[in-house]
Image (cartoon, rainbow, N blue to C red):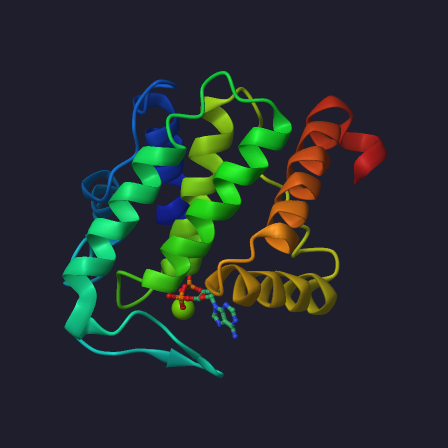
Length: 182
Ligand SMILES: Nc1ncnc2c1ncn2[C@@H]1O[C@H](COP(=O)(O)OP(=O)(O)O)[C@@H](O)[C@H]1O
Ligand SMILES: [Mg+2]
């Protein structure tokens, strides 16, 4: 159900969000709400409990207001992505992705939501949605993705930027020749 609703909400957002629109926390909350409002009360609502996954402690709720305004600043610095080349775009997506996942604004769905925001940024710059490759080598890809994210949480965005550049390149190749790439 979550996957089906996500596909519909993504499709709608791709039609609605302009290539020159600044992405804001309010817009991100609207995305989360539009995706999950038929399933969960917390759709679009900022979480009210602290969250830890594996060894990662996401932004503590005590400082959530400050974290959200920092996230808004990062979004305002890095979007809109219209006119960016692949290197600028990879830099912008990596920066936003690390911040959004670290803040983890919602009770659930932060990973998918953050990759959705990355797709919106890619579309703004004229690229297809990212191809992270989780489908064809889940273990290896997820491991690299998590490791790159953790470096991003520590403000070193280089691995995540490389990963995003690869995901954009793979997406372009797939769009140009879906049969050769499948
Ligand atoms: N150990 C980890 N290291 C780095 N990032 C992590 C780790 N565990 C989870 N994450 C991040 O959090 C996301 C999962 O958060 P969650 O709110 O459950 O989103 P979803 O429900 O969409 O999977 C992952 O996709 C990843 O971006
Ligand atoms: Mg989850």
